[in-house]
Image 1 (tube, rainbow, N blue to C red):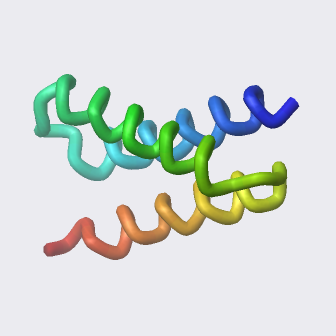
Image 2 (cartoon, rainbow, N blue to C red):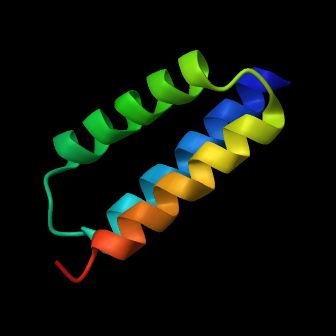
Length: 67
């Protein structure tokens, strides 16, 4: 169950990154997905932590968008 939630959290963060920074190369989006996936898998030990970190990353992406 943790793996499924980790994958869904990565999907949320990557889609948010892609929507905000749509002009970047797909390799960068893929790299972001790998970094987020590794971070969530290693850092978050519960489903609650996975979604807390995923939504925090999505919020940081959105916050940095106008820059």
